[in-house]
Image: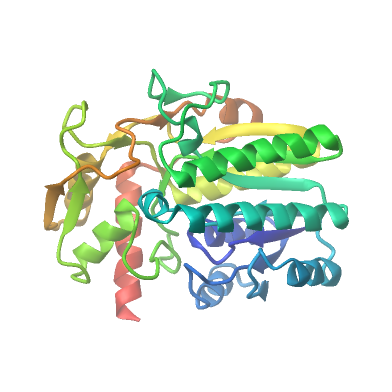
Length: 336
């Protein structure tokens, strides 16, 4: 089975590609390298021993995307490509709406034209918005999103549901991620974004090795036990394996729209993440508390019961694993 993976050199994409190759799938990657590095392809080969066909193409480019589908017999698509930072989306909403919606619409049009109707979509817990309870279940009515990034995911989910209503041959799996952290056990791939990080763990890592002076934690006056935001952090390898479970489920089941949370089901505060990182890696981080960041929810975590029941998937890695694997990856990065 040959899968097209958009954003396949990115953080979650590259880990998923490794898992796919290990399970015998053929993979074609499309990525414009906006927030990833070409060297990731070498790391994927070193980890798996396999070559991957790669196209440096923006998914918004319909002509080039069509050529890729013409050159390769694609059986299904995993769609990661898109901008993904909550804070940045508040500052640059038009960039987020243009890129995330255009790329998905273009991809769906090309898939439809080539009769490829098996899609796994990288969504987000941000679609839940503000809820009366912080534990998110797939059956919840989606709340009012608090940032443009989350709104793009909400709109795309609606588009996908409409696509299925119009054509019942589609198999669409929507995976709502919580907060991915960690790195591959080899230390060869992990999260090291270009420029100033927008997410917590990459910022912690850059401070830990002296690339940035200090970490600012956004807000310590939330109504939580230690005053900082609570999130459901999930190891990226567990998350990658969730995509394999989704593909396997799609192969075995009828057409439809399937929605799953991928998380641990446990909330961890930002301060707890920082202090766990310090303890596991035996170091001290320079961090301070700053103002709240616009668009952040106080508490959100998953109920992943449905994924365990229907996909046979659940997380296996701990918060300590996430912190240890992330740091080992960063040490390898700076030694290159």
